[in-house]
Each structure stands twice: as structure tokens, then as C-alpha cells.
Image (cartoon, rainbow, N blue to C red):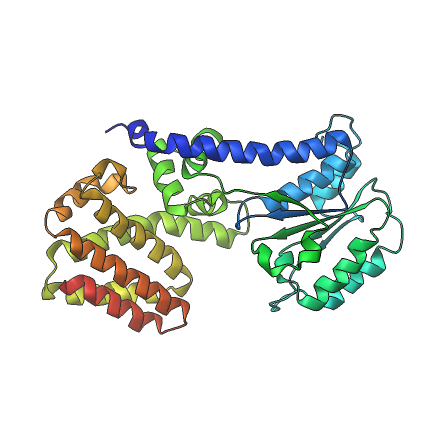
Length: 353
């Protein structure tokens, strides 16, 4: 089947996602255009929805020396913000090995804000993961928000709004961020990065609503050479893992026990890649469930024939049972159970069902 036909079901979701994203951007643009920047903004939404990036874009626009209501990225202010050296762009985040933002971090900011901005027309204080401030830190921040410094605005990012004090929320203008749809990510991969449509389709569905993860999987995410190497490993390992798993379940008898244990051994030797491997296996089991009734909607299109063969070997309830076992395996891995023993248990169940 043609890939475009397989993706037609995502058109409506894509339109909704586009609308939500446009509304978020339009609201921020309106704030800049009217030159009425609130004392505090709260960017809420799931991880990897661009909250941090949009905060810096907002700060650039609010201080850009070009009069076009958009960051020019050429003026001194834009260049300093891009380089992370602007003295009036202050950022707070979790300290290394800490689980909460402490009151001392907020107090340090309070001291800095007793002086006027060095050069910015609008100084920004960005508090990343503000929902991880302890109560004392939130109360300290509240005092600053009650008497905001001149020419200074705060942007708080959060994924869990209920953890923030109601008094903090009441002083923030809330702006909701939504993750991109899989179809949007696919289109980005195709049109901006020149990825083959089928590969882009598979990657976008594997990564879910996470563009950064999709770029990393395709080795397109800029960063240290180590990260690039991991991206290359994923592309190679994906085909290998799928072939191994499909081969493991194609017979479904005791003769596959040895093969399952060998697969467990190989995967457990690279613990840093376990989560990626489990994501791939999850999509395999998802496709086995889907294939029975909607074969055109599977993710791993390049293994279409193999899924067709296996779907005829087992009853649907078997695929559901494997999926339950996978969820249990993920829970055990998350609870720091032995990787090798946990994977042994899972692949043995695949081997003998």
C-alpha cells in the first residue's frame, strides 16, 4: 500500500495539533506586539514540547534591537542570548544530583535582582522545572513575584502544575504547550532533513511525540560524538532486534529457549541501550496486535511480510499476553531489578507460548 494512504488517519489529529501549536505561538506573539509582558509566565506541558526553547525565543524577541517583532539573530542582544552569555538572561534549574530546587537558589536570584538589568530592556529569569521547587523555595519566589523588579519578567516551565502553590499560579499567565503529532514529526523529518518517507514514518511512530528522540534515533541530533554513535547504533540494532524477536516467536516452542536466552544476554551487555531496545520490542508487539485487524496501520512497514506470516501462526490472545509480559518487564526494569534475569524471564515467555 502507498504510505500516504496509511497516514490518512492521522490528518485530523495533525490539524488539531497544528491549531494548538499556532494558538500558543499566537498568544506569545500578541504579548510582544502589544508590549505588555506579564511579570510572570507559566509554560506548562509535557516534556519535549519546546517550552525552554520558546522561552529563549521570547526573551530574544523582547530584547531584539531590530524593530520587527521577531528575533533577528543578528543584533548583539540576540547573539549573546544564542551564545548563552547574556548577563540579563538568568536561568535556574535543578542542581546536579538534586531532586528539588532549593530555597537558596531562589534567594541567590533575589539578590541578583536587587540591581538593575545590565543591558537588557527586558530581563528574563527562567526557572526550569519550577514544579520541582520545594515549598520553601516557592514561598521565597512568591515574595519576589509580589514585588517584581523593574524591567524583569519570569518564565516558569512545569509538567506537573498541581505541585505549584495556588498563590504562585495566581500570579502567572499560563500558556499551555502541546507535543507535536507523529505525523508532524514525520513531515519535519521528510521536508527539513530529507529522510525517506518510509523511514520517517517508522521513526516518528517509534519516537512518539518526541522530535528530539526521533532526531537522535536517526543520528540527526547535534551533540557530542558519543550521542551520534548511539544514534547509529539504533539504526543498526533496530533491524537486528526486530529480526531476532520475530524469529523467536515464529515457532513458539521449547527449541527457541536457547535463542531467547542468547538474545537476553546480548541486550543485557549494553544496559545504556535497554530502553531503546524495549521501545523497539514494544512496537513489534503493538504491530502484531494491530496486524490482525488493520495490517495497513502497522509501524514497522519494512517487515510487513514477516508480520503477516506470524499473525497466522498465533491467536490474538497470545499477542495480548506478550504485551502484558512486556509491561511487567518494563516495571521490573524501572524498579532496578536485575536486567539479565528480567530479560531472561521475558524472552522465555515469548519462547514457550
